[in-house]
Figure 1: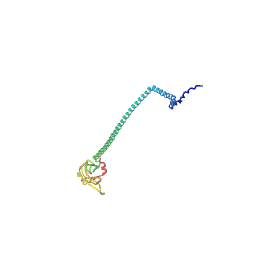
Figure 2: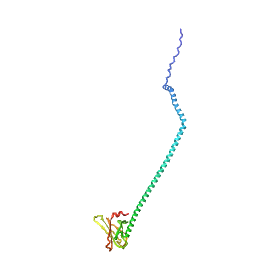
Figure 3: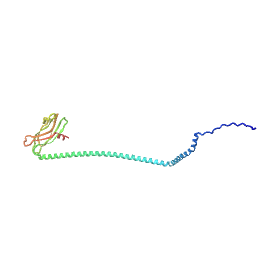
Figure 4: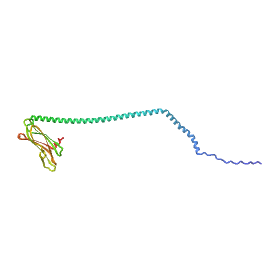
Length: 258
């Protein structure tokens, strides 16, 4: 009889441990990451080495560029200062030119005035020469009839000259003054004589020989519009000497007032 031995107890089956997905990924990255890291690090190292080797040259280039910028800036400042100085000089020159032009115009006006006065003096000299020589004829004459404003309202000074050519003998005469015009509210012509004009000066001249100047003051009435002024002169007790008269438009006399 075969002896029977007891059967050992059956051990439970332990299933093998399953790999997690993290472990699988870690295994894949282990073979991929190191080469990729080397591929990235090596160029960086090479670039760093190249940059480190060329750094002094780059510093020199930067220094040269900075120095060039400073030089250009200094040159710009000099050019700006020169431009401003040129503009200031131009302005001074223009001002001096304007002053010189004004002086030239003043000199030209002065020369023109002097030439006009010189012509007047020459005319006066020629007139006096003819007057002394008796070339104006044996009679009476009126010249230089003028108006001058006064400080009074509607007041004027009338100046004129009476002359007699030749040096033979003196002459007594009388003169009269009239102003013709219109009233402001009327259309009729009005003639104001010396009395109506307020002339209180003596209207006779005694012993006229060659030339005699006269000045009288007149005053126009309110509302009166003058048109012309008439001056007459008559010799006393001399029938052979013709009376003289001069009539001038009032506006023309006003234009001659300085």
